[in-house]
Image 1 (cartoon, rainbow, N blue to C red):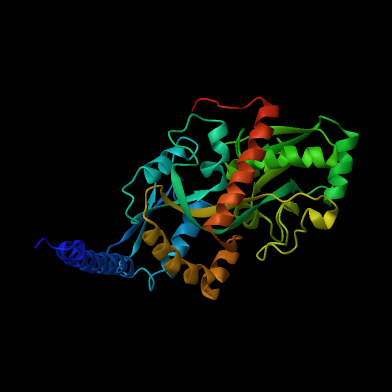
Image 2 (image 1 turned 180 degrees about the vertical axis):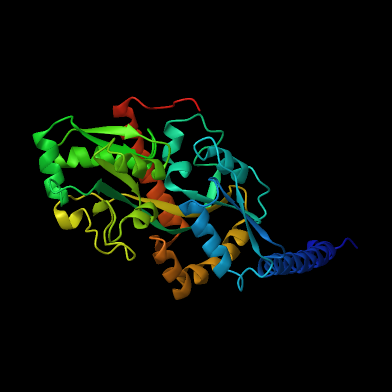
Length: 338
């Protein structure tokens, strides 16, 4: 007597049931392995590439983070300085590293976005993943003390009365602070002559030597020179609030100029770094950056802790990339060769 259809399907159902059970078991094992990999991070020391030389603001703050992160990263965090190429050399080394979570890039607004408009860099904004935003380093307008411009308003009035005569030093021709100077001139309706120097320290020396009337530098460099008895004065800090370690310098907004400009710092990793690893890094880093001891140490070097997740950080960088592209286009500075 021939078997019924129901009887013929019985062995198949058994095989399917066994296969399903095996699949579920394998899935459980793989899931457990994935969770173990994530929970075991970090299994070794982390290398952080700073695309600038030792002693600068990026290097100093990266080392502060490493010092305060010992409990969360017991295997250690090693800072590696790779300067050159408008900070693109070190950034490229970082984004092209093994995507295993053990090489980070400590990058700033310029090298992660706006510099890509002015140099032929070997990477793009799609070459990396952001883990989080670390904080901000506001631009500060410095002058050599002069009774003609004790305030930002007086400085603007002087520039209006002397169009094209006021020279403002910047850390570089295509620097972030150069763009802040251009935006200040546009917002105030004045004509400023931008003079490029090789770094923030050189801008200060230019001020002291009388070669320029003002300088746009980063807040850590301003902090080092704005003090009692100094020949240098700070007229404005380009941030939403005053900088804790240089509280006597008012913000631009306090003085009627609606302009905020800060170089922000971020932790980035190679694009192919797995989600679970990125999440593990973020989970361990966030409490470090929120620790009052770290925040206080950062404030002491005029750095503002401002932790934001990757989505917010990416949005900030994208907006600045677009703004910088427009400004560089007006200045005729797009895609210069290194």
